[in-house]
Length: 80
Image (cartoon, rainbow, N blue to C red; front, side, top):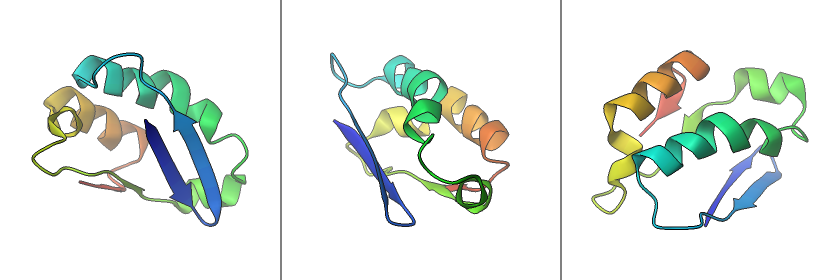
């Protein structure tokens, strides 16, 4: 299960069908997160930072392809 919060908005939840890996996490970011953020007003989306958990239990968050996507999508406004 993935969910997020931004400026009082609850984002998600999003349910993964299998264990999370780099491909399924990237698919969430590319294909599902934009739709999940539709209810967040544009001004908030333009100034928000994306923060993800990168503890030892979350390696899909730190693979190169995910970091490159986040750099491009959030203009280096992400933490994790």
